[in-house]
Length: 114
Length: 112
Image (cartoon, rainbow over all chains, first blue to last red; front, side, top):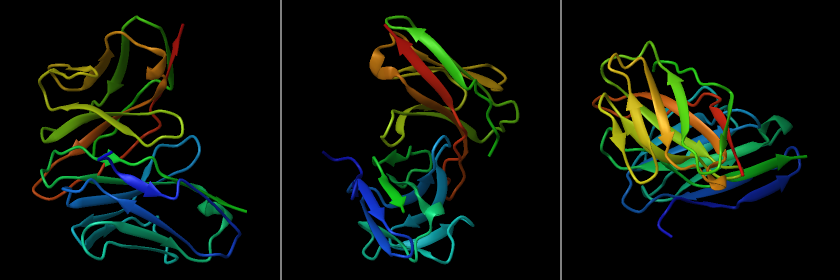
């Protein structure tokens, strides 16, 4: 399978704990995006990487959230001191450098904070 | 990015064509129309995109009106597996990058 891969698929954690998600984009894609989706809503943009550089962050990305893409390949999204409001599906997408290239999404990580 | 308006839900009989409308009356000249769908518990799946000409691929056809203020996604022979939320997105493309802004989409239910 050469699509976008996300791990884990599901994560249950207690409030206050830290969690980290991983995304492996399509191998030749330089652009990587993180989105968050809550129940009944469309996905919302969180942050964007061009290779290893994080070029844009949404105001939704609070100080408790940090994303990295150290070698321009896989990316991690960490949430510190999780809150119940962080419960959502976290989606990763990648695209090539062509400006009109569509984003290809993974199947997400479902986070439940109890 | 221009906003889009889609009906919240639609029904379609299996084997029939599903025609999903989208209004984007404020679209500007450098904005493309993209369609994605999301099947329950999966990530959004890219379907098709276009600027002003009609487009067709193995999944669907995209018909854009001449004034570009609206478009229709056509699934020619809907199957039960086409039941999903369909998102119409207007995307501004420039020399840099651009992301996708999702609305609530149209829930398409395909019935036997």
